[in-house]
Image (cartoon, rainbow, N blue to C red):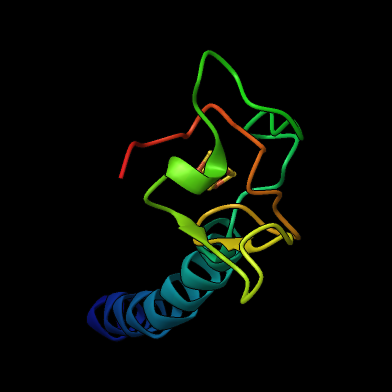
Length: 89
Ligand code: SF4
């Protein structure tokens, strides 16, 4: 009888593992999608000679003077902007 209970407990534990894994993955998804401007202290002007147009994460628009996008920061990004994640091209 005890073996039956422990086997059932073990099976219930195994059944719960995939659900836990799915919960962890779904909780982590928003963090991978992109950082908010606030989280990376984004500003619309250059800092110490660094700006988004010179950053490896910047994706310029067709018009280089227009706002583009960033691979790691959400939203419209000015080519003259800057954030703490700046990485020179
Ligand atoms: S990582 Fe920061 S500095 Fe680089 S393009 Fe994105 S917002 Fe601009």
